[in-house]
Image (cartoon, rainbow, N blue to C red):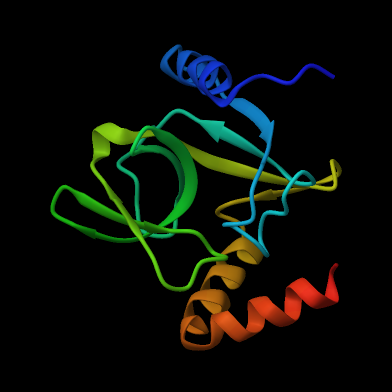
Length: 146
């Protein structure tokens, strides 16, 4: 398997999205844990067909990097974005910095979950209501699934 630098990889992703095509890729990193697991789960990223909304998972440019996180609030033209596995810090971006939106999550290369499914909405509802104790839940989950 050939490894690409992030710059080359995301340039190609942006090119495909700009051409109106969806892209499927394996996630890297722990910031969206427990929903997305580093090196195991894949996402389908699609071009934006509508204005991004709260709870959408988006790929966006932030300080020279590409990040895949969830929109947690919108005020005017500013989107507040945070990873599910992060409980303190947030990022801020504008609509122009958002590249695409996740439409499907592929678990273990088999199970596909639509981001608008009842299962996905239930996860979002529960996980975000537990924000005050997310730090402790993440610590337990990381130990259990190591």
